[in-house]
Image (cartoon, rainbow, N blue to C red):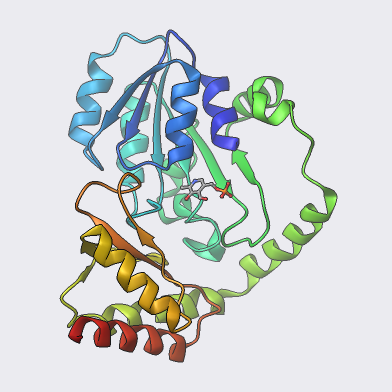
Length: 280
Ligand SMILES: Cc1ncc(COP(=O)(O)O)c(C=O)c1O
């Protein structure tokens, strides 16, 4: 809803959107609904993106990217994206659903892994959701004051819907305190990620390169991915199989999501189960 509201408020018919091909579905839907020209560039391919930006005669330009890609776990080259958007006078909408609360000092999100200059760029429109690390519901947008005011005045999915219930705001305040103060949660998460990577090294299936809680295990064949997911489920391990069209053809995968609530023995259970399945 936040993505749909922001994109449709910021661009329209005479404008152009440039989007990473592996962006989240909500960003693609937002782009289509905006009626702006919708140009998708290959995943992380900034050379292609720059060519498109240089060639366009659109009135307004909006580059859209997941900050942490939801089905890959990799991180967008945010610093370079910011530089490109400044050079070509484009807005940059970053969806940090999977970075907020997890990445950067005090879990402040993907932008806080950059230098001060980049993360203060007036071109950035930062969106993060509150249903993942924050464990609540909803989303927020942070941007320069004029953009925020524009969204308040014209983001339709924000205006024409009942406001978030106060009880969620109270729960969120508690979440934000934990996110800010509990560095140990991020440390536990980092340990879990390292343990998983180490434990799965000898598998015939490979983890995609990711340092975030999203650790996709590439299986390839959709049926096999579903079968493995079912076997794991029978053992009490919830690891969904992700198939086309959510991911490209032939790139079915198990989407392992780790959290700070997992303990070392949980990760051991998962790695052992996968090693046994691979051997069977
Ligand atoms: C990158 C990304 N953006 C947006 C969303 C939507 O967030 P929500 O489920 O809180 O609506 C998700 C996943 O749910 C996501 O992975």
